[in-house]
Amino acid sequence: MAEATVDRRRLVPRTDAVLADPRLVDAAARLGRAPVKAAVVAAQQRARTGELDPADVAAAALAALPETAGGLRTVLNATGVVLHTNLGRAALSPAALAAVAAAGAHTDVELDLATGVRARRGRTALAALAAAVPAAGDVHVVNNGAAALVLTATALAAGQEIVVSRGELVEIGDGFRLPDLLESTGARLREVGTTNRTALADYAAAIGPQTGFILKVHPSNFVVRGFTKAVDVSELTGLGVPVVADIGSGLLAPDPLLPDEPDAATTLRAGADLVIASGDKLLGGPQAGLLLGAAALIEQLRRHPLARALRVDKLTLAALQATLTGPTTPTWQALRYDLGSLRARTERVRDQLAGVELVESVAVVGGGGAPELELPSWALSLPDRYAAALRLGATPVVGRVERGRLLLDLRCVPEERDPDLILAIRTALGAGGR
Ligand SMILES: *Cc1c(COP(=O)(O)O)cnc(C)c1O
Image (cartoon, rainbow, N blue to C red; front, side, top):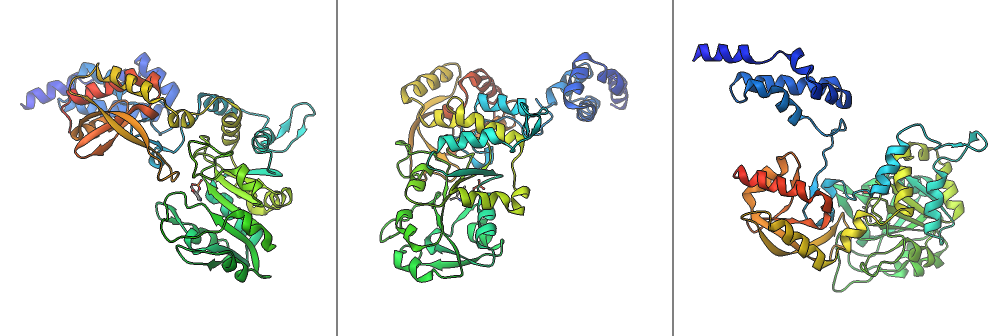
């Protein structure tokens, strides 16, 4: 036994020798030397314990390496949740990804190449956003929806009051509550109405010289039903103070598929002075906070010192513009996936797998949007004990578990990844689950 161990140890190739393997030299050029060396050391260790054939050390190290040095792994989202918060909400379009890659180099983000002088940062992306919503006097973009709220509260209401309905003091997710966020700016919340009912008179009675603005928040992740009353933006515009509407999801114009989701254009036409939305929800773009509204207010926000701390990266600006002007996004496509095509595709995949069934399923928007909308869908169904193996495979696949079954809805999986999906399922089934 001891002798066998010694023999095996002698057969394990030396680190330098493994690192000289051309495939690992390539990997080191792509990923850096440290992670490649760590993978080699881990594979050598497995060879010493007999878990791995010493001849396979280089191959095992290679297989354990990530596709990029970025740390984040591409996941096939088979959850049927189009904007899955834990999977990074919107997947960028190929056009946006190409724009990000180009923007990663030195770019003209703040330089006018024609004159050689400094130009407004991200001017083309801002122009694209303004063009997409002609009802906006001007636009600005910050890091995310929460940053847009913080900038607005700080610039327009620090030391003053934000008048807001009690029914709209929502928790966004992961314990983040809008009221806490707003109060962190030094603004005071003047809560009006009740959880289920707020009237125009409630707002009117709270308005005074201490008012910074009225905030309307779209309760994007829940629905209140029954004995309810809320005041529309159009009714609030006559009260003599700015009306700010946080619409959440980032629809720029009405979408018949999502009749209950507010959109920027309609909200501005209803009289909102400022509209706040996220870039990576229904718009299907990068994480960003969109601010659209009266030119004077936007200018006030842009000039506030805090704006610099919340400004977006050039990668975001590039992805946003490509999202606004480019082809339809994966989010848009997933929401409109033709049911017959989805079924046929899911059947084709199923036919290449043993022990997997086709079932009806229900997909949802997710990301705190359109909480009541159900999208009829189709899914592969397999025993839920394969869930971990699928998550942990070479191509991570995340599905959802329902009543002991793991459902894999292909709606949000790019069709060109079907071969990888099939291989991942076969591998998981072959391993017998865990
Ligand atoms: C999602 C959401 C936010 C937060 O936006 P982030 O981009 O996640 O920071 C704020 N308000 C509403 C109504 C939302 O739906």
